[in-house]
Image: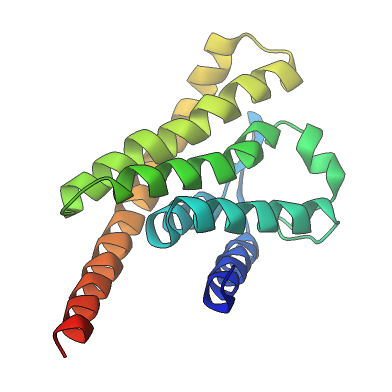
Length: 184
């Protein structure tokens, strides 16, 4: 792996840690708080691509498993991987890889395409893993856990929209700068 790739992986692992320093919004009816770290997952996949996005999220989770309090609310250690939010954590590298893979398949990117991919492949993947694991750990019916999780949708729509705008602008500027360098 190139030094530049290692730097990007470490940078996005650090972004995830920085987003974890922003206090979570606890909810009285569920132990899974509202955090900004899902924004970092979507950014990692969209900006770094499938392989590096996956590696950045795995690096972040390994640091958390080692005990660093990088999750929102200062949580860390191996115990978080058996708690109610474990499914969401496990989905981080998968969602980043899936986002990066799908976005790489488009010849041209528009803001609408990026937003659609972020909502379907990103947010949906997080829920696909997070909700069933939360239901299992909390010993709740899946349908009840899905109803509880509806509270996260407005915030995730906002985070996906912000991430889509940033990914679109960064990818657009990168493509333009690459074409400029090739023309020179």
